[in-house]
Image (cartoon, rainbow, N blue to C red; front, side, top):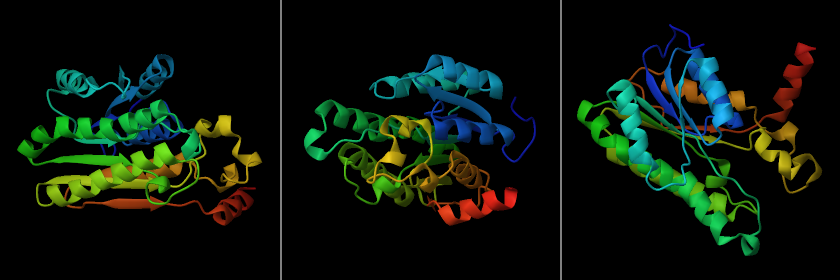
Length: 252
């Protein structure tokens, strides 16, 4: 259940993509810190189980739908009477395919979920956040939004776009009282990779070379838990396989 105390006690947080590996880790960390959570996801069963376990509210949503942002804001306002204190754009669509083999539908889905949905959610929340002079927007990006990798045409296009959107927000919201944070992890060891079997492919990082989802969750928590006078604009996370091995050795 959600802690009744902690650094985030009373902080209202909306988290998208809560049923993925990173999303679950972030939800658990924020709930442990006392946040009042609304979690979003497409899979009803896992989402409702997570919400029940953490004492959170759940909203089943397909972020690829154009009209979802307005409906979401209405439901959030019904629960809290206000827009969230923190909006975390974590949901993502990921597909591996060479540029020549990337289907138009996959490209459009990546743009819809990874770029358009954050844009719509931020735009829906901004007027109220600006009016009250406070709010925090966290955008979870990717190393593929800074570097090009083969097979990432759709994903990189969307994540490069999200990073650009974030950087514009930093400039536009400076001095407004609002905060904007970019979380940029390298590959994270989640079930998302199961169908690609990365340990058997030379073109992908192995599981041992990936970040643990908890590392991303700690980064999000660090940014969100700062005093309102502190703005953490960017956190870049890269795996340190040697350090992981040392910790495992010490634990043994």
